[in-house]
Length: 224
Image (cartoon, rainbow, N blue to C red):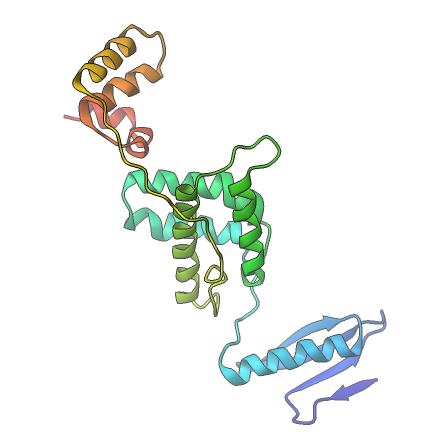
C-alpha cells in the first residue's frame, strides 16, 4: 500500500513488518521517519513538512545532551571564562546534568525534562543533599549558555530552558571574620595535620575564592 501526500511533498508506505514509513525531501535529500500506524506516520510527516515550510526544520542529529555539554565546555567555555567558573562548570555537568539528562537527544530535550531535574535537585533525594537556590541558578545560567550556543550553531530552534522556574534566591548578609578570628583560624590550621589546612591558610593569606583555590595546580605556585 502506498499513499502519497496531495501536494507531493511526502509519501507514506506500509512496510512488511507492519510499520508505516513516511518519506520527505529537504535540501534535495530524502529523509525517512516511521510510525506504528498510518495516522502516527502521517502526523510525524505533517510536522516535518510544517517545519520545512516555516523555516524551523532542524536536521536530525544523534547529539545527546551529554555530548553537547562536553563539546560546549571544551570548545566554548574553556576560552571564554576564567579558571574558577570553568572548574565549577565541569562539576555542574559531571555531577548534576550528565547523570540526569545526558542520555537524552539534544533535539528531544524539553522544558519538562529540565524542570523535573531542578525540582529534584532542590528537594534532594536518595541521601543526596538538596542544592541551594543560588547553586541552582548558577547551574541554570551555565546550562542556558550552552543551549544558546547550540541554537547559534543551528542544532536547536528554541531554548527549552526558557520556561523553567527556579526557587527565589534570597541574599544573606555576608559576615567576615574579625582579625582575632582570622588569627585563631590560622593558628588552628597550622597545627592541624590535614592537607586541607594548607588551603585554609592560603585562602586567609590571599583572599582567593573556593573555585579559584580548587583550580590551582602545583605549577601555579612554583612559577617565578
